[in-house]
Length: 467
Image 1 (tube, rainbow, N blue to C red):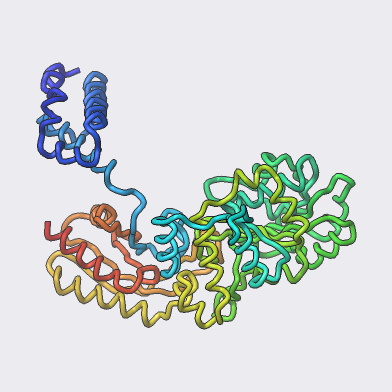
Image 2 (image 1 turned 135 degrees about the horizontal axis):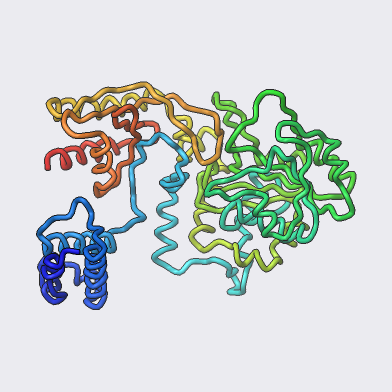
């Protein structure tokens, strides 16, 4: 322990009077600033006593402490949830909020935020059903009898199992016992719901007779889970939904189709792999279908449950439905998103953000990349190596999991310093800019960079490299 360092620790009052710290007093009340200062001083004392000071420690103790206190105050007042630029090339990136919402939803969010809004009250001033409008839109778009939304698709699955299968058996193929993001596993969700998992078949092959042989008096649900975030190839066999529906009708057991991402547009028409359509599941006869709202649907985080009205009504009455229900913002943004899908498909492609990114013309991607290349090459010819490269983008979000899309990226390498350091500085820019590192180069993928954002990126380089 270096006692001399402890002696150099400034008093709280002295730090409070520092101009760089005082400027935060308009955003943070004095008592909170005092507590933050005391906490940082206590942490420093502990590091000194335990000989655990960071390697970057500045021997000027007051200067060092002032720096870490100012950094802490900045981190508190600066918004964490803010606009960022996605140069990673992953369209549905969980860390960057998954689906970018379509532009017209900004007006909806603004109006809901600044005013009172109608959530569940009718024209007569009486309490109404908050699911009513979304239910109507889902009926039109998917052909279902009824539908509701909850906080996400894992919540949708949990609610279905809790409401319809608590203490009873749910039959699922072993090849469909998936793990979704954040290490949440379907068997664990089933266990928490009180349902009894009954696995059938093998990882790669499950037959109709496996399902039928597993049916007992205690069977509540036959469940199909779409493998949206992986693929099993080779010697495989899965039972088609139509076969499961016929089996369910034979034994009067509801069939639930968990689609994961869910899709309302047939992307195979545009050269992408076939993703199960929500409408097809309903048409085939699934009693319930659940899917995400913030992936291929391109809306806010939510989970849809659609299907037979008698089952939806039972689910709506379950106590967990209130626990998992969505707030006014999600309901409003979900409504606005679904209304896009009422339009002709050629308009959807233009107005729907996720679809427009998936189908973004490669010529447009290259044009954006070339613009930034020329600007960086002209401005920083002595300090940066810059190239335009043909690359591959990912869809992400557990959607079309094996598919990659052609793209163009601007590859950047500093003449001095590292690409890792440059990437870090871009992430810390006032508009955080995220790119991917590959072989000591920083790549900015223009499939996921919106038109006009290349100008923000260029300005960021001017400010970062200029300083």
